[in-house]
Image 1: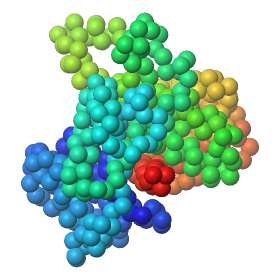
Image 2: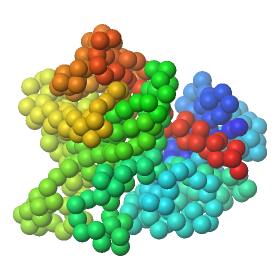
Image 3: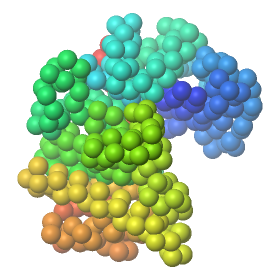
Length: 398
Ligand code: ADP
């Protein structure tokens, strides 16, 4: 089965075509600057990357261009569009309505629209992608894979905020969590690599990218995660503040003469390690600056590590133990120094890191020593493959 995996943003659209039998990526790329001018990046497996500038007034033209590239007689990877058996869409917020991957129909679209309040930037863009694909690929089944779904197993004590209960009842204000597809994929993969039953392990997954979150997975179920109602809560991230005393927002708003939207803009886009360092949101730039004597860059790295440590410690406590800790995403997979800095403070859990193994970048590897009480691993995430697998599962059940 060939699955077109779509991750649609407001002005961009990332795609992959995956053969689900071999799990080979036949082609991948993205459309950028949709609604502005338009650029298609297309790369067939084993081939050169092609970049084409072309008008993309809406996502429909973008999807059309992707499909044209896929069936292009010279560089395409499909003979015809009939070879696309299903489309798997990443959808950011499924609210409480979606605890599982779902076949998309009009009812599902309406339910996702109802969650728009909770993800005003993401959900409308995701749905535009769905509509564009429906228009261009009529009759091809579409499946929605939700970032929040994996976390719907969290118990009430983990997802409720300590605010009047009516706000949960009336407005569904609660912790939802994100990166669910990644946390689920990585925790499952770790069990597979270790040859242990998924439902026998207590795992903590650290998804450390530009957006970052930690998840506690107990016996294959998400029981807590660091992101909340929105992806702003939790760890200090590239440009997001993570946890902050809400009173600080009122204080800053008054001093800087900002309204709530202005404050949220600062917390989402101008904070995190970028705001702390004044250098960059990218940890590679921070490392360079820190080791050239930039104190603020060094401090930003330490603040980040401290925030990860607090969540790992918190989840080891709330699960009453931990068997496996996984590092994933851009930073988690590639930055051995940050991993070392985190694990240096986990000796109390009996964790010991093998310095040589920890040099790994972007590969599955156990980085703890054999006598470490907790197994620490690098497990590269693959959200597209996870979306492809879930899509196929739903189609086969149909
Ligand atoms: P997102 O998908 O949230 O945009 P990624 O998972 O791609 O983020 O991670 C991006 C971050 O990963 C970068 O900001 C950078 O800090 C870090 N990163 C990526 N590659 C490396 C590397 N080779 N060494 C250190 N850090 C890296």
